[in-house]
Length: 120
Length: 173
Figure 1 (cartoon, each protein chain N blue to C red):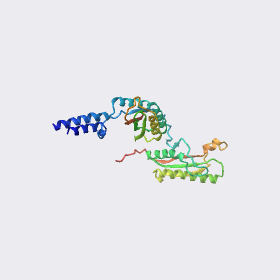
Figure 2: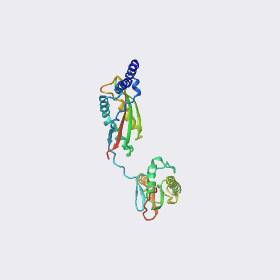
Figure 3: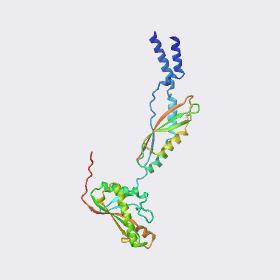
Figure 4: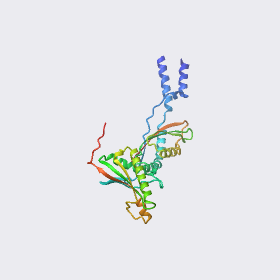
């Protein structure tokens, strides 16, 4: 009987905890917001390539979608293979303009990878 | 036991479960693509008789001190020498226009050629491969009666004095 109770508690706990994960709706919302910065960041990257033709690599930008408003804040670059300060600033500036279309009651923390590569 | 079970369940629902990490799949990377600008023309070109440079080697006015703007150009010259070990000796020839005294101009052009030599040595080019010679105004390539002509005459050239058969660089492990 005790084992059954423990199993019940674990099941309840897992069910409750699963609610702390990011729902697919929020995930899609974040992905859609990030797509909107593609064009301006691309322009920044094109300018950066004029300074350094070899510039390429991965950048990971971490941020929070604030509770209630969905505004993206607490933006940091947690990984930067490019090492170009102006591209980094451009990404942070563009992400700071974003907010979720459907704000959540709780904060959502995100790490979002951005891959830079020249086309030629 | 029933009370304990209930408390545990409530605790989980009210936030204690934040200790549990729910692993999310990472987001697919946002792809940023842009075209590189046209490649700039090479700064230096190796010919059978010299290393031609596309820009002028710049010095501070009346001085043998190299201006940093010329460092990339000289780096490219050094790179050509590294990649072409068959070039055994080059002469770094300094030239001036005819303004001022010829003696002073010869001295200055010698000092400037020597500055270039020292720079190349600092870039791992063997001393024995580099000769510095200041010609002053003695070898003009244009008239000294126009600003353009004088500008053309103020120059540094890299003349191949001696070279052997083409060698192949061997990469050592």
